Length: 344
Length: 163
Image 1 (cartoon, one colour):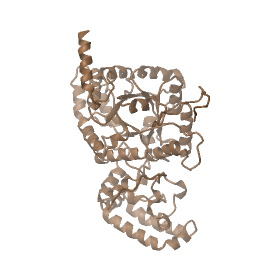
Image 2 (cartoon, rainbow over the protein chains, first blue to last red):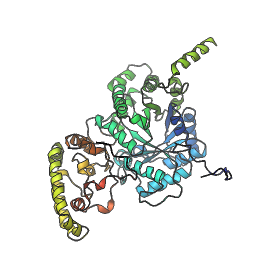
Image 3 (cartoon, rainbow over the protein chains, first blue to last red):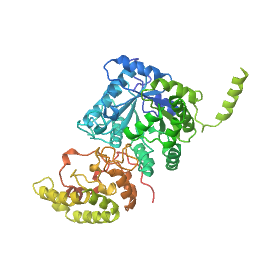
């Protein structure tokens, strides 16, 4: 720690702000009560850093952190630690996803120290898809941790400065801890409690699976508010544009944990330009999600449609006025601004 | 034997009573259990345990039974060996994402937990599997250490709620 008499060393990272776990932008945006936007980067099948930067560029204007997936769907791509380190080097904030499928407790704890040393501030703790869903189903599934024991371990490393074994860490990682939640798959009434369990285990922010079913999500959030969980974590709701009714059907059958109601598919089918309709639907969902009490942001996953993310976020209006609806005095100020806009 | 396993979960309350009874009996044998643990005699105990629990719950002898916290549905039957709840991939019909023909063990566990005497036990965080214990007897462990040894102990537990 730097005391008042110490010389300032520009090479030395500053300690996090009081009450913060990390130095990251995502945590600062969320703690300041602003509506946050994160987006998922489609990881390249290449060793060229430019492929990462090209993909990050189209997302970076509209998001507070970029998710680096960890071989999602059990398919090999550039690693999340590699992508996160590249992003940090170029000044982008990342959310490093850590899955329990491929590495045991020794590897994961070491990777988190390495990642934090390279400037990673946010870690998303996931169990991960089974090896069977990927292109190498003959791989050994590790699952030494599950998402919740991983959260407990990383929190212990950060807050107690100790590995799982109890051995001391001389410089603990300053990381903001996240977890995933899928409110849309059975057992539905267990899902809010499972989220609460993750928060109790150390999750500070939550990124959910794709939300296409507002009634189910509203029931989920009602339970979350009843439990008071939203006061102890920041919930970012997963959204994304559907390219077509066919693509939606394919996702529903082939990607684990995706719930798309028939009505959504029917709406796409009935549209003249399905891609455009999918984009419009995504914008509308963001606007509806934002109205729900207890929601702190959105997480945009636009697999192979990353170029649409910026316009979707812009059109939704969430960045024009980042303050949460629940904050006092907000509607009046917005009306005033509108009035001046019109007079221009 | 999925049929028996599912029967066990459906009768979680009755199974829980038997479990508690076994636990109480095991506790009486504590001095003996302490002597046997980790020695040659543990082997026959483990074989009997595997026979009984293998029949009832498809036990895989992880050596750190958490059944009393998981609605009598064994989490080691989960292809991802999740010990803290269902993953986000559960199919709309409640079946496993990895084995589509199998019911998710955590969908079962959640249903079983509702019938348990303390349904909130399912919310306790379970420690990761201790691989040195695989194949050893959970009965002897419970007799020696008590049943809650698999639960994650945080260094600063929250103050006890007033009753």
